[in-house]
Amino acid sequence: MSRPSTRPTDWLRIADLVNQYRSLPLGTVDASVIACAERLGVDEVATVDRRHFTVVKANRTLTLLP
Image (tube, rainbow, N blue to C red):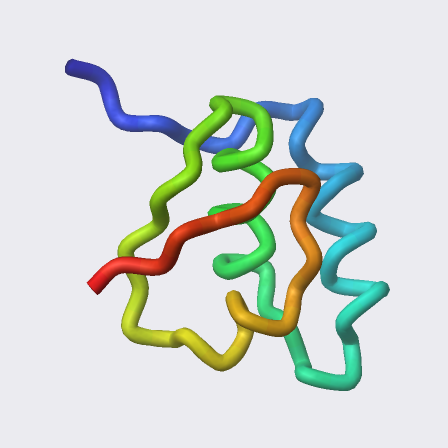
């Protein structure tokens, strides 16, 4: 099984998220996880950094694990 990775088309969304949530600050890594989840239709994201993921309004509702 291949691992999801960012694609060139994700970078506009990543930049938009980083800019929109610059007061957090939302980093590129968290923004790339959100962009990939949106593109892939993933609803569940494993993270220990709940602060950023609970604030960001993604294009889909993300369930945070654990």
